[in-house]
Length: 230
Image 1 (cartoon, rainbow, N blue to C red):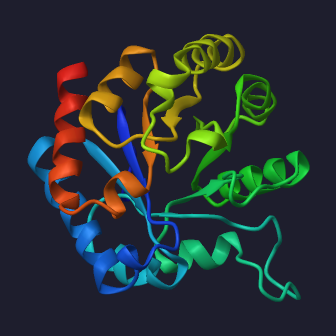
Image 2 (tube, rainbow, N blue to C red):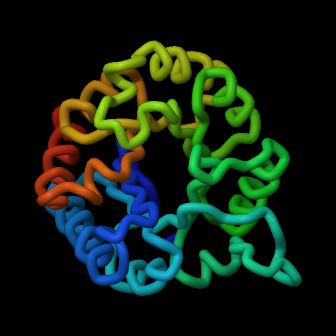
């Protein structure tokens, strides 16, 4: 696999914001690549579906899809297959974001399909108990994201640090291979630093970068926080 993951990692979800669409998304991806090359920190981007191919062809950093459906190629109108995102240049996918939830059986099927295709999975969970259920599926990464904090600018690492620390402890008691990310409300380098101090292997964020006045400056601040936490 050409673009491997390294930890601690920063994963930037572009969602469907206008600020991350088309050329604007390309600029954010290029900023992320520039900071990654400058600092050595692994930064992954999850563009909008229509931009995956152009961004994956333009940057050397890992590119994920924001979602994939657990269906094989065939008569599944409107669905997004693992084969489609791989062909576009993605090396993995986010699954079960609170804005795109899946049943546990569908998560399991999608994780398995990604694994069989030689791709990575990043599964989101809202709290400790859902995280434990997801951990049993052995995804590559598991992001703990309380939905009430998403997009608020209030980081879970400060508002509810016990969720992060308890998730880390209990998930690693099941499977130490799973990388645990901290999500929701991450907007500053200090949020990243605190998340890593609590035991996480990185962060998943969106608006903190995508809607920032200077996305590159925010990405750089976060990457420097990763470096200072190593």
